[in-house]
Length: 296
Image (tube, rainbow, N blue to C red):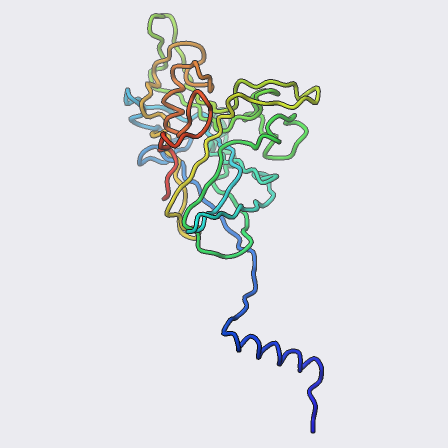
């Protein structure tokens, strides 16, 4: 009688056990992905050479000066509500699971030479699965938000996105130049040229230079969730026209034209509403439906 070798016997028993219970095993492999973001204004593409039309309550035309967004906490959601957090690749646009999107394709506030942009996030997931939604947070996570930008790697060293030691980074920055300029009711001598939306944390205390922990009364980092999302076929649209919906970008009441995330700034109310943020608390609110980001 010819006996099985030990190795063949083990393999044979394993095969029988697998067949006997009707199950099968699969090998888990990470799934790489590229998540695309398209900046638009209504039906128009957003870039430095494109005049954006019919913006805000005054239907103003405007040119782009700057448009960048930090994103962290990228998650993909299953049908049962559970989620998987993505691991982002390291590159000049991504570090420490934080990504910087940059839609400004010319230097010097869109008046200079062509420069690189970044319109996607690249990373991987532990397994290839079917997901039904996507979620991410605008901004830099708190543990990285109050550092010296000269001491960290790209993209966290982006000086145009740094606000101050205490307030940290801007989560979103968009600068526009409306045709006809910006006027101030009650001040006939005022004429502004640039309209700003700089989203960032406010009411912060603590001195990071001295090694103190920083806490902010209003973090101002919207959590964006988009349903019916297919990781292999969908992109995400960021709509400038929807961001400024309800605002007159040719008029400003006081301080810097636009919104610098102050809860007392008249112009900030509409910006925050459009992003689903409560202006008083700085938190995403279930009562406010963000309209700026959508599935494409």
